[in-house]
Structures are given as structure tokens and as C-alpha cells.
Length: 599
Ligand code: PEP
Ligand code: MG
Image 1 (cartoon, rainbow, N blue to C red):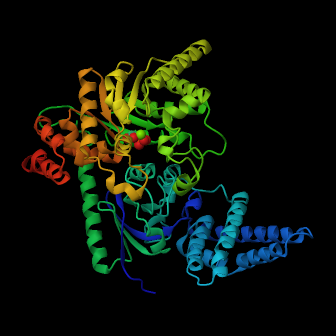
Image 2: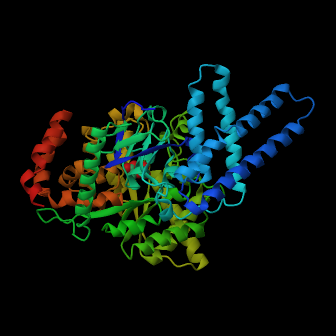
Image 3: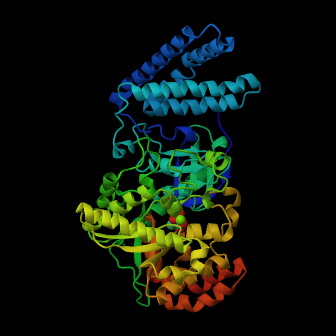
């Protein structure tokens, strides 16, 4: 059936255009493996599906047989419904088709078909029938568990193989209500070439990870996962935050053209890899990378980063079934990143668990409705670390041990109180003592603070006395200055990096740190957004940390900018209270079109 073309608006997260078929994934099933199988494996995957169906049929029949006499009659009826759903051709028959025609692995095929059927249930008039969706989900859950136990479950190919589309011609776009940041991470190098989620703000951690995957993405698209159907054609315009469902041939052609243009632009930018980042007036600028996992360090080097400005170590701690990573496991991870950077500095941030980065697998909706009232204001980052002293010292020891393999810096997130600074430094001293006592080698590392809570920015000199460097976390600084939950799409329009209070705090932090002779960097998303490059250079910033994929375009901006000229425009910008005027000022005065064209 031909479906109408629809546009859905959300928040642009990651630039570029993606065109492909929609794959709807339920938030609770994002951990299902998604990979393509080759022709030779099709029958084996169908076999796994059949085996899972038979195993579940056995389980359900046994349950029914062993029901105690006093069990309510509805229970037996319910098991019958489950058995009926299990054997219905719309489940297993259609799932086989996804395997045969699209070459999806069995788990993926089953979840894809579940999404199709769930939609049909949602649209049913009859209440009783509509509620059967939950039964269907339980049956599928049982089948997925049976597959995980059965043979072939461990055959998930390496990501490089997974990106190959054996299904043929079509790239795939992942569509979900929400995806937790740690779940998003598992899509690195996966089959998907674009993402759309219903919830999330531009600097939510889900968006940040999506950006690090370097594929077009839109978040906060509210109804997207309800409007888009499994297998619909979808265009993601990651520059403007637009999702077009079932585009007309003309629109499709236009976007294919833009897609080619942006690929050409990428290739052009990639040539800047070895060019040093120096402004027109000769100011050297340090472009560092933000990474989530040690493997990202390789990408950082490849794109010309001169170090890692932020290693978000919390991703090593999230979604683990077997407890937190121990000292040795952490040490290996930090060492891998440090060695990969070949002597370039690696800034390891101690865990920033909490808010939208829970330790356990949890969706944004669960977080919002079932947990702390204000998780962003709760036991997060250094607050959590200090409340778990054993865990904290373990992490500090692991980081210190990695210092022997390169240049390590230690970064502390979310400091707001001087007592936190004192306790952190005491924990560090104890960790060093423990290593010395155990005869384990380590070097002295520089210690820095994230400036991301307005309180810290407002009394910066007090903090500067205790730290070797500071790194401005603009994502949280904006969130806490404006009292806007960065993960909440409902208030995303008020999340304004141009707010004079925000710009004032950033400018003061840079200025005060520089006059105290302390290294200052920005590692929030503003650092990787070319719209802010001139403003930050004008404020005196000479160190930017961002996703590896953003380094080339920021470098291009730096090469085109006269830092002195930017600085001279700054007072006017900081005093302006009119957003329109501010943006005009930046467009017309800071950017010199003639010079821009020359680079
Ligand atoms: C920030 O807050 O700007 C930052 C870099 O840290 P995170 O995004 O991990 O909170
Ligand atoms: Mg932060």
C-alpha cells in the first residue's frame, strides 16, 4: 500500500543526510544483536528460530501441565493464548521472511516482526484484543531467551562484517522511542546509517553518543516511532532535525544530491588532517578528542586530534551484568587508550554516573518516572564517587597505573564544593600511598576540574588554587545555569547556549584561568559546534575537545578566523540581550566571508 509522505520535526544531533529503510526497535530490545547473515547461514538462522519456537512450546505446555489445581482458570487460558500466538504464522512465518529476504539474524528478524504486530494490536478497536500485545511481547521475550541459550547464539560477527548489507540495496535507519546512552554505544560500527528517537535533548548523553557514531541523527522527534512503520523509507536530515517518512521521488532526489554534497565536503575536510590548527593571526589552537571507549583513541589519532581532552570513563561502568569493573580491568582499558595515543595527553575523567547515565540498563522514560525526582541534581559524578570511597580509590589507582604508559591527566566532574575538592585530593593521596605500598609504579598526574556547575564558575579562583587545569563542561553548565533538563525535549527550546548568563560564565572562566596561568579547555558540545568557534576563540580559548568526527570542520573554522578580531567584538556580544542581534553579530562581524572563501 502506498503511504503518504510525512515530515516529523526533531532536534538535529549529528550532521548529514541518511536515506534508508526504517528498522523499529523497542527500547527494551535494543540489546538484541542486529547483524546481517550471508546466504549460507540463512537456513541455520531459520533453524534457530524453529528451535526457539519448539523450546518455548515445550516450556508453555509443561507450565500448563503443572498448574496447581487451585490456580485460577484464567491462567490456563492465558497459556493457551500464548501457545496460539507462538504458532501463528504472522509471528514465525513472517519472521522467516525477514531472515530470507533481508538476511537479518534470527533475533533481529523476530524483534522486527514483533514491532509490526505490536503496531497492529495498538490499532485494534477491541480492548481485549488490544491488550493481547503484552502477551505477544512475553512470547517473543521467551523466544529471545531460548535463542540466547541455544546453539548459534555466540555467532555474532565482528562489526565490520555486520555493516555489510547482504540484504542488498538498502541502508537501514534505526527508529526508537528512546535509547539509553550505553545502549547507543553498542551501535558503533553497526548496520545502521542513521538514527531517530522520540525523546532526548541536543546534549542528552544519548545524543552525544549518537554524534560520536558520526552518522546523521535526530532526537526529540516525539511521535516518530509511532508514525514510522517497519520498513518505511525514511530520510534523516541531520542538519535541520527533519525526518521525512516515505518521501516523494522529487524530495528523495534532492536529498540524494545533498547526501553526495556532504560526502564530498567530508572528503575535502579530511585533507586537513595533518594541518596544524592556527588562526589567521598566528594563534595555535589545540584540538582534542572526546572518547567513550579506548578503541575510540585510534579514531582520534586518525583524524588528527593532538590528545584526548575527555575520556568519559563511565561507559566502562554501565550496563554490566557482572558488577563494576575492577582495578585491573579498568587499568587495561586506560592503558589501551594511553598507548594508542602514542605519548599524546589523555585526560581521563573519573566516573560521571547518574542523571541520564544510570549504572543499570534503564530507559529515559523509566528514569524520568520511576527514579530520583531530579536525577540531574542528585547523586551524580563526583558526588557518587565520594559516596563509594572503595570504588573511587580503585578507579584512581587504575588511572595512576596507566600514567606509566604515556601522558595521563585526571579530570574530576561536577565539583561545586571545596569540601569535594579536599575529599578528592585526599582519596588521590591514599590511592598513591596504596600503590607505593604495593610496589606498583605510577607517575604524578596533573589534576583538573570540570567547570560545569555555575557555583564553581562563580568562585573559580578558589578552585583554581587546587587544580592544574580546568575543563568547561558547557552541556551541564547550560543545564544548571538555565535550569533546563538537557535530556528533556519538552524544554529543549529553552536550552540556549547564547544566553548572556551562559556566555558570561564561560568568558569569565576562560579569562580567570588564563590569568592564573592554568590550562583551560572546553569539552562540552559547544567546542565541536562550528557556530561557536569564533566566539570561543574571541574569549581566549585555545583548547577545544570534541568528538573525533567534528575535528576537521572546527579546524577549518580556526584556519579561517582572526582571533584578535573576534576578541574585539566580544564585549558587544556579551552585552547584547537580543538573541537575533547576537546571531546577526556573529554572522556579519565575526565571520569574514572574503577570508573564509580563501581557505
Ligand atoms: C559537559 O557537561 O559539558 C560534559 C562535557 O560532560 P557530560 O556531557 O559527560 O556531562
Ligand atoms: Mg557534564
